[in-house]
Length: 381
Image 1 (cartoon, rainbow, N blue to C red):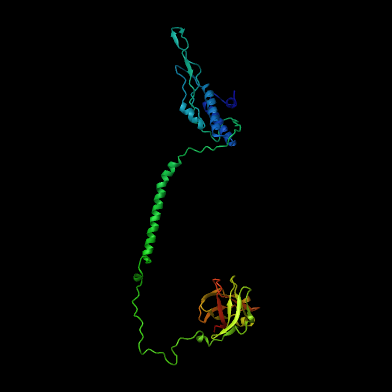
Image 2: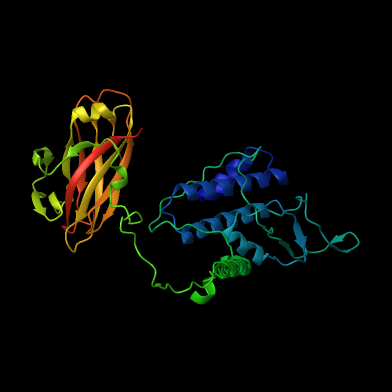
C-alpha cells in the first residue's frame, strides 16, 4: 500500500466510511493537503504536480469502487473525460449507496442457475475543488518530496486576447473622439485669434496721413518748446551724492573686473567692466547717507552710458545692511548718456554700517563696459 492510499484509508477509518458525504470530505481533504504540499515546494514542476494529481485520483477511484454495488450484465465503464479533466483540478466523487449483496438468477423451480456475469462499475470522479476548511474531515498529511527543475506557476485559463479584443474598440473610440475634440478646439481658437488672417486684415486702424512739412513750421528762438535734457526736470530736487568719478576710492572691483577713471567731451566718468564670472563692481553708500534715508522713500539715480558701439544690459543689486536691499534691477543701456532710476522705501531704523550698490556691466557676460558718470539719491517729499 503506497503512501497516498494509506493516508486516505487511515482517514476513512476515523469516521463512518459507509457515509458517502464523509468519504467526499476525506477525498476533498486529500486534495487540499496535496495542494498545500505542492505550494510549499516551489521546486515542483507542472509535470510532477499533474502526475501526483492523477495518482491521487486513481487511488480515490479505486477506493470508492469498493463501496459501490455489483451490477449484473454491465461491463465496467469509466467516464474518461471526467477522469482526464480531474488531472488539472481537484476531483469530486459521484457514488451511489452500497448494496448489501449481489442478485442471483434461478434457471428453474428450486434450481439455482449458475452465477450471471457480474462486474463493478468504477465510480465517476467529477471535479472536486478542495475547500479551505472541511468540517468533520480528518486531517491528511500529503507531503511532496522536492523534485529537480525550476518551479512553474500554472496561470489560470484566461483568454487575454479575447478580453483585449473587447476593450480595444472602446479605447480606440475614446482616443479618436478626444483627438478630434482637441483639433477642433485648437482650430477654433486659432480662428478667433487671427492666426490665419493677413497683416492687412489685422490692421483695422484708420489710415494715417503721411507727415508733411509746411513752410511756416519753425522752432521758437527761446527754445520754450525744445525737448528737456535728461535730469533737467529734477534740478529742483535735493540730491545727495553717492559716487563721483573724482573720488574713485569708494569703488571695489573684483580681480577679474576693471574700473578705470576716464574723461572725454562729456566729462569725467568711471568705465567699469565685469569679469567673465559676471562679478559686479561695488559702489559704497556711506553710513551717513543711509542715516538720512532711514524711514523715508528715496529715489536713486545712476547716470551712465554704454561703451561706444556696444549697447549692453546692466544689473543692479543693493545691500544697505540693517535697512535691507533694493532687489535686482535690470536696464538696457545705450550709447547716449542717460539716467536709470529706482526707488526704495527704507525702514525707520538705524543702519549700523555703510551699504553698497553693485553694478554688473554686462548681464550677458560678453565683456561689455559701462561708463558711470554719477550715482545720487534724493528723498521723496
